[in-house]
Image (cartoon, rainbow, N blue to C red; front, side, top):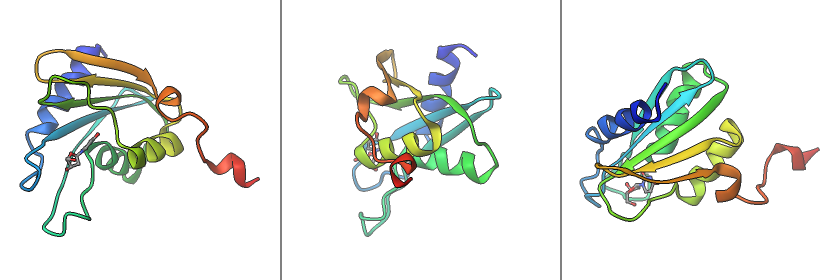
Length: 130
Ligand code: THU
């Protein structure tokens, strides 16, 4: 799958965002090891505190559908500056996705590209419980 397909899927998912409070819509597209794309958008609610980011929606959807191995995630926003995943999303993506490639984009172009291990150095994960 081309990078542009994954980014396009993230942009499409963004249109479903429930961002009535922040007005900041985010879309994510997670590529599984078998090439399936699972998308997510951010979902806010009136308590604010129960907000779920687009990246975690995508990952939780994928896990709940039985996917277990992942390659890349694209995140799309309407902003000039690159918008990388927040701390809690980095943790969840790391635990369930491993060292994913993270592709950042806005509505016009790619804005950044990282390995998750660069965004989350020295992670806390299950290895440390052994
Ligand atoms: N948000 C995401 O969905 N993903 C990110 O990577 C950054 C932040 C959402 C959470 C909230 O709904 C809105 O963007 C503003 O923080």
